[in-house]
Length: 259
Image (cartoon, rainbow, N blue to C red; front, side, top):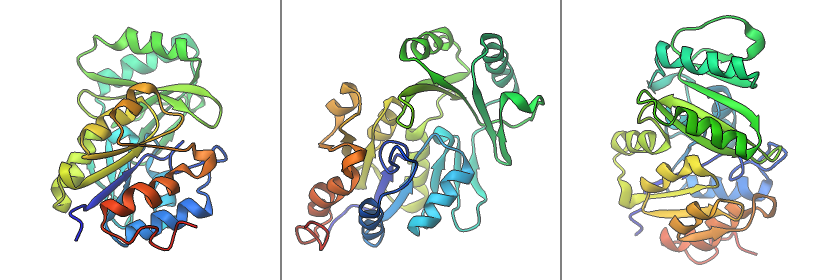
């Protein structure tokens, strides 16, 4: 009997293709896995998107949103835990992004703000600067790196080939949220498998015993991985589940999935 209890899946570039959809083969593989262990999405995306994709896959475990700043009960759509960004750090980031003319989204448990919103909402949990060239993302990360109130990381946007920079409360990331989920579900690092494709998945990998990196992941992430899957365009997550996760779970090779 396998000792693995939790599978953590990044969304964009891992679970979702460039068209923003889950392919039939990937969906089948994830649904199969969810019958063997708990499956949680772990993404920078907001609560509405996570609930939609969790529902599509029939996932019932706690789901990780906003780069770890919010954990969702997919059944009710209610937050189980929230790490607020803080009004001071939120204001500093928004003022800088507005000064640069950078597009962004700012999320809170009740919704999402864009630059056109023209209003302030207390209780923001994550701000993401969007659609940056990689050198621009690096400059923004460097600019805020010394701010002790913030966790700052860049992430690749596979749907347009550009980059985002995510801001959450200091110490809050996918790894923080993964450990919260582990504690609440009775899992631990040794019982956890994770899959991801970008820099914001490094903390997720650190909270997982076995790690799947997608083919387009940066070399730093691949170096941490035990299995490098084909690209999302080639249903890489399904391949990883079929060829890597199945043996870990003690299932017969192929498990009815591999052709």
